[in-house]
Image (cartoon, rainbow, N blue to C red):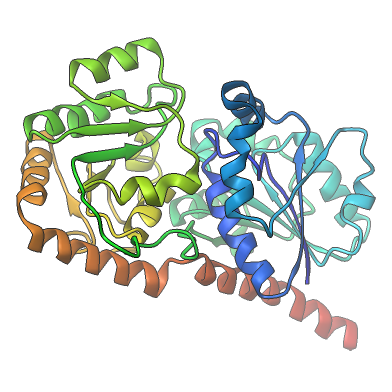
Length: 370
């Protein structure tokens, strides 16, 4: 099958978490023999920031880790018909310009033979619903939403049985426990500061508990303003700046534990949607403790795959227990790995995607045969 994917960036994961999942899924599709073409806008915001911070060297981890994947840049002047020529399936991520989304829908409406899907991996459907509903998806065959709560939003917008929950997952080719265990120390968090929507939660569920549990805390991520860095310094945390996602398994392998602090929208209005770091951390075999988060879809086994802290004091107790109890660490690692390998790999998501596409194409084929 020839698959064309329009993303914000495949090459850059600078504040662009969807690149993690996209790389894993496309890598799996390539391994299964599918023909993949990826387009990203020239001068994308994520790539521009990565190059500004690290130059071309910032792209080396991506090139080294995913030699089978490539992308091409497009501009508004590119001929869209040529970009999707011969495609069986076209997927458009929500972080694309409205004009592109509308023009692809126009091609489909005029009889383009490919299946056209919209892929939503963000909270804007509830945080900026007017902006999302301004997208012209009228000729799209369906929507892929990265959580059931988001799927319900689209059903409310009239998508009915043409929206599917398609969770993110871990790329097990790259995200796995170290082949040989080394020394582990302290707590690590790989995450971006964002726009202040979880500042209080980070302080309550990570900075203060780590200090009180006497665990060294290493922080990796971008968009940390001066006041955020000052807060980290007050709590004795060590800020290391951006880390390429390809380096995450190595970083996890040096630490005793990590934490999940969901952004406010995913803890309240869109419950049940974990960040991709949960999948990746468990796949790497590191114990995880989560701030309050409702696993509304039963993706995991809370208390077995990871621990839940209802407040900062309980987070401190969990971290202290993990630090001193190797049996607890081993149990969490084994359980988390089992769940990821059984249910939440990129290979699982490719299986789901191919089933969705088949459900759309088979009825059409039957009608054509009749």
